[in-house]
Every structure is written in C-alpha cells, then in structure tokens.
Image 1: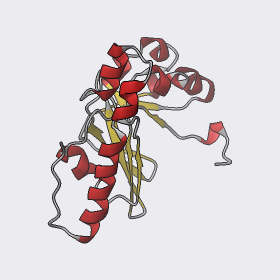
Image 2: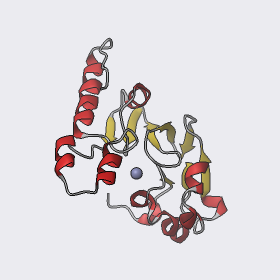
Image 3: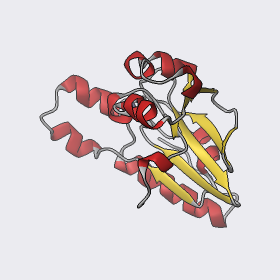
Image 4: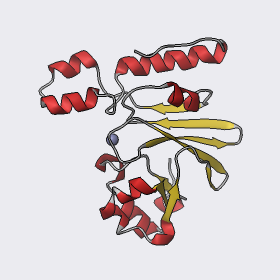
Length: 177
Ligand SMILES: [Zn+2]
C-alpha cells in the first residue's frame, strides 16, 4: 500500500495461531505499535506478549465495540480451534469492512455481522473432495474440515451467494448444511 511500517497505528489480532502472530511482538516493540486482542488471545501467545509493552497491550472483548482513530471496530466470535478467536467488522466514513478468516463453519451469528459490508475478506481454505485425496495426515485433514477448522470453498460460495441475494431480497434465507 506504499506506506511505511511506522505509519501503522495498530495491529488487531484474530487469534494466536503462529501464521497470524509470528511477528506481532517484534513489530510492536520496534515501532511502538499498540496490539489489540482479547485477554485469552494475549494469554495464549506468551512469547509475543513478552515483547509487547504493557502500554501497547489493548484488551478487547467479543461483541464490544472499540475505536482506533476514526475507525470503529466490532469483534465477533468465530468457530476455530484457538483460545478466543474472532473476526472484525470495521466502520468508517459510512463504509463497513468485514474480516472473516479461519472460520470452521458459517453461522447465522457471523452472517449477521458481515452482512451489508462494502468489502469482505472471507477465507476459503479447501475443497472437501481434494482434501480427502491429499497426503496430509488423517488428523490434519480432520482438523481442517472440522467445525472449528476452516471454511470449505463450497461453504464460502454459499456465504457469498447468501450475502449477494440478501442485498436485494430482504426475506431471503439460507440454511447452512
Ligand atoms: Zn488459525
């Protein structure tokens, strides 16, 4: 985005899995950047927390709005195998952005949060048929496809279909299988 790292005002953490937080401690320490996460998430990433000054640790709660600059942010719970994982909806200048990654399965609660967004970052992680045929260990396959793993391509497709239809037809309902 052609901005310097030192221009970053804050980092908001969804959950403590390494691929999401690997550098957050160093980033916060080096550039004095506040880190926003739930208490349980902070507790689940002690190595990162050692590097983050107490001043830069900002506790947030699921379903409680907080503010960074002129952006209002609402964390919502997601089904994922982490301490207290969440997604975020961000509101500014009459626009809504939703960040929804690492979701084991879609739910009406999440749909309600991300519905009406101007932009959604939705992670879809695997095709169930392809996953069955991969050489991954059985345990990993079960984890990915489990209800607290990741969203399948099919379910992401259903979600997008729902959200698009919902914009035009308020009565449209969808049952997730
Ligand atoms: Zn994860």
